[in-house]
Amino acid sequence: MSNEWKKGVIEDIAKVSSGGTPSRQNDSYWFDGQIPWVTTTEVQFGVINDTEQKITEAGLKNSSAKLFPKDTILMAMYGQGKTRGQVAKLGIEASTNQACAALLLKDGFEVDYYYQYLVSQYENIRELANSGGQQNLSAGIIKGIHVPIPPQLEQRKIAKVLSTWDKAISTTERLIDNSKQQKKALMQQLLTGKKRLLDDSGKPFDGEWKYVRAGDMFSTRSNKKHDSDLPILAITQDQGAIPREFIDYNVSVTKESISGYKVVEIGDFIISLRSFQGGIEYSRYKGICSPAYVILYPKVEIVDAFYKYHLKSHIFIQAMKSRLEGIRDGKIISYKYFSEIKLPKPSSEEQQKIASVLTNADKEIELLEQQLAELKQEKRALMQQLLTGKRRVKI
Image 1 (tube, rainbow, N blue to C red):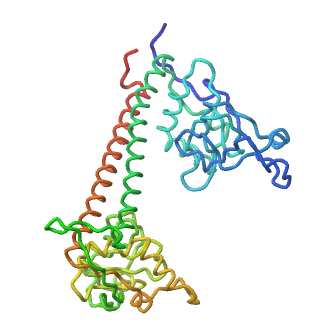
Image 2 (tube, rainbow, N blue to C red):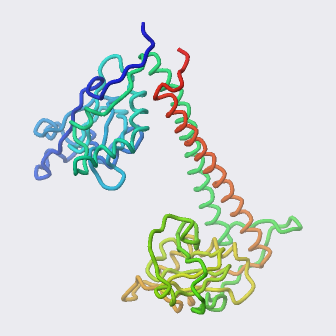
Image 3 (cartoon, helix red, strand yellow):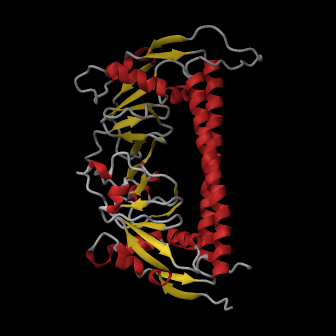
């Protein structure tokens, strides 16, 4: 048996088909359907074990939808954003809509190897969709995608090696999800005083928390005195206020257009006038930001980190929402509305202890996210070597 790698195209290794959509006008094709029906939004580099929508036997028979077996590789031929070119593997028998191409591999070809190979070729496949002035893939384009053809036993071994990385990646993703849920529960308990920590002497903090008007704790500033040489800050929900250069932010500005921007000092809090879904953001940087934001600074002594968490907590966001109910233009948030919210004011020592616990929870999540990024990078490097034959595995 030859152990040489050959070259081919998808048409050499698989039959390419596609699905269809039963008429939405006919309830009998959809109502109480039991047959899984895949759309391109569900084709996202993974195994599909269930679908959001189901069709009936009548819907299957009276449309161009087809039933594909487990282990069929699906590829999104068109769709919004990053969808086009993404692949998935059926973990169940399912039908698809017409925007999904179904690759039914012929005998002698390993599904897991070719699934991994097509994942690795995502960017190249998207480029194929841009050729010839069109933005979509077609069955013809997919049939012509170049693929390596290693001996079957080697295909199987490569797929097995890569699956160990997939398991490590999915395990780490689950750990991150669990850690985030634990942090959320901790915030719910610690930021409301339901759970009290131990003070420096080892005794639980006691006594009722004070609640004071936000306006008694925070003032607003509108300092526009700058010579435009400060970094422009992007106000993000996941990283707070950070210099635009740290993220992919392609909005050009002129010196004149930013002359009215407000100065943000380190330790300021920032309210988006039009969206507070993620709470109020904290700035670790000095810079300038659009006048469309309210800049807050503490006028009493606080532990910044405690309020950094509280002002982004579900408790605070719900309090802000209820404060805005009934206001005609509920999307606009001014300092006035914020100033009337009641904020907790435990002792500085308790604020610090709570902030430390939540900061440690964040560090644990960051460490896991770093491990996840490293695992994904290792797998990408391995895919480039193994899936192309640059590095061979022992059978």
